[in-house]
Image (cartoon, rainbow, N blue to C red; front, side, top):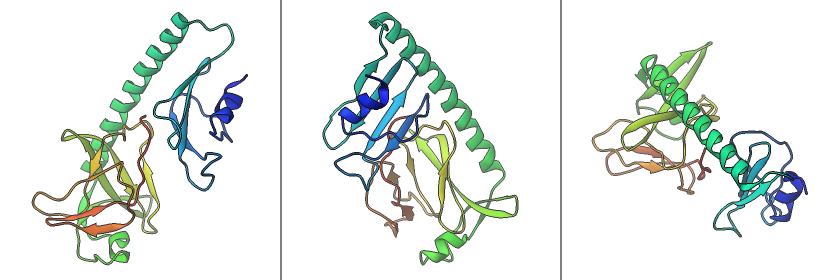
Length: 200
């Protein structure tokens, strides 16, 4: 049984196989939502359907023993750590290029006077939302005028929090929140439009 077939047994639908990172995908029980995920490392892989599984199931290619699996997973963990560090440094650099300004995305949500980090790049005005774990910047969310959101490649998102807008002790939104949209908290503005994301 290959990895895609293994994923299908667990109700996880893989339409395109990417290697070395957690990828959100649809599931057979909730095909309109990305309620599953996989991470494929070549000879070892992991799949999880959050509706039916409390932890990932492990796939091994034929002939791969436990010692080889541990070595593959250990190397993948080191690669993840390196990508996480690179993304954090990239986010810090991007923030040095920003100015505090109003942004069209927030204006469209009804907050035209709120200030956010804005990065002017290639003629685009991009809102940059720093993401933190334990107060340390681990990455950022980049939002264009239309509201399309992207994360930096390789950044850590599991357990990260982020806040939009200025204020003293702003309310913080965690990446596992599943309520949608932007709303104002007691001391600031925060975005809850992203669903929880698998560990990277």
